[in-house]
Image (tube, rainbow, N blue to C red; front, side, top):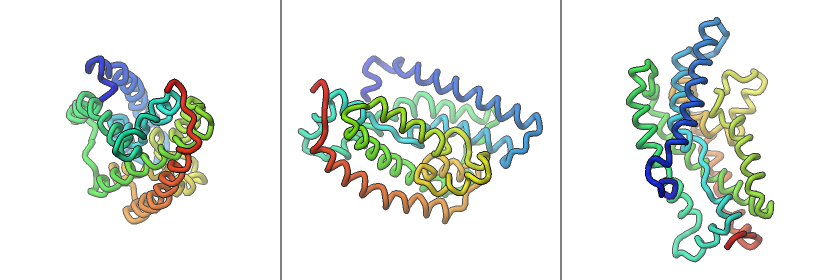
Length: 243
C-alpha cells in the first residue's frame, strides 16, 4: 500500500476529488431530468451509473504505476525478483485499491439507500462483467506501458493520451446510450467499450449479456497475448531514469 505510507489521511485528497466530481454529476442528471431532457435512461439509472462508477473507478479503468516507474527507474528493480513482472504489477495495483475501497467505496455504498440511490446490480451478469473488465483493464494498461517505453520515458505524454482515450471511449463518464446515435455501435464494440461501460450497463439493467460478455471475452483473448508479447520485447529497449 505505497499510497498510504503517510497514514490513511494520505487518501483524503483523493476522496475529496471524487466527491467534487460525483456531486456535480448527480446534480446535472437531476437538472436534466427536471427540465424534461429526452434521456434514454431513467433518472434512477443515471444516478446509479454515476454513483457506482465513482466508487469503483480504480477497478473500472485500471491504471498501474508502471509507466511512471519506468521513467523513475523503479520498474527495473522488479526484474531482480523471483516473480513475473506483470504478476507483481497486478498484485501491487490490487493492493493499492484496498484503502479507497475500505474508506471511501464501502461507506458510500452503505450510505446510498439514505440518499435514494440504488447500488444493487439489476442482474448477476454484473459480477462476471466486472471481473472481465478488470482483466482487460490490466491488459490495456500494460500495452500503454509498452507505448511509454518506446516513447523513451515520456510518461506524461503516454498518461495524457491514455486518460483522454479512456474518459471518452470507456463509458466511465457518460453512458454510451447518451452519445450521438451514429457513434453508439462503434463505442460498444471497440476495446475500451468493454471496460467501465460494460459492467455499469449490467448494473442498471441496460445490457445484452451474450453480446457484452462476448465482446469482453473476445478483447481479453486478443489483447492479453499482445500485452504480454509486446512487454517482453519492450524489455530489451527499456530506457530508465534515476536507477
